Image 1: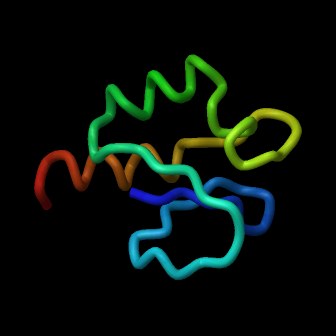
Image 2: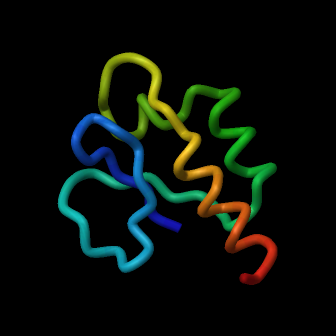
Image 3: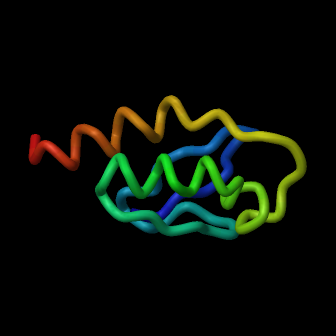
Length: 67
């Protein structure tokens, strides 16, 4: 799944159409947790400071369960 920063917040780009630099994660909550631990999103998306991943986490968990 592609993730982008839109309006200063990390969002899931499920249709892969949002503009800007993107970062990719699997539909696995463990993959998202590992990326958060390594602080990969600010580095990959070239933004300063931490990003809130709560909205993305709910999307990843929904997709991981197959809903």
